[in-house]
Image (cartoon, rainbow, N blue to C red; front, side):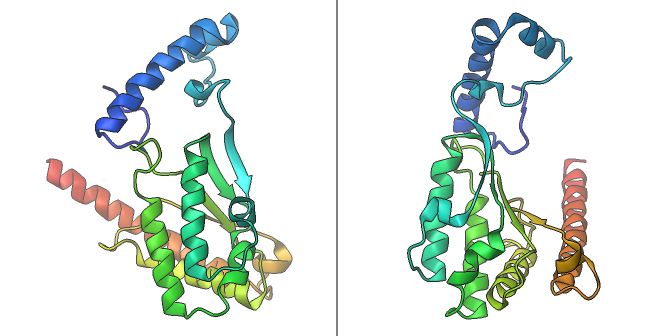
Length: 227
């Protein structure tokens, strides 16, 4: 069986999902969409993304933390645990990814009374949980955190501690696959040398460099093991 998605684990659930989605794609191509569009897809003139979800649900969503868990007063650990459960609910009711538009601004109110160590540990647990195959039983939720424009003390602290947790990697020190961390750019906030968040754009670039270096080492190790 051909593995069409790198984010899918070859387990029992994955095999069932693969077979079911192939049946569903053929049904949509033959019975739902216009014949000319089906022909273009079959001849690879164009590609209909996530075809198996056609006319069932939407593809991808941009949200805020409050969209998923409301504005109830919570400590940081409770907020992260509640958010994780909400992400699992959403990811299994849609196709595509979940993008948090301003994650640093969203979580800033929750970190005031927590220590740096507590927040970093909580972030790492959160990231490790996001890298479990909890979508369909065989995939990781495709989650993206956009950040970088929040300049408040708590917002900057949230960004710093999230980056520190991400840099530590999982329990073996391997880089996290998810969430994607997207650093938003704005000249007056983080691009100009004198802007308040310029130090964080430099830190994100350094982390990106380390991620690629570790991923290359892992790939080399896998190749050597295969050989």
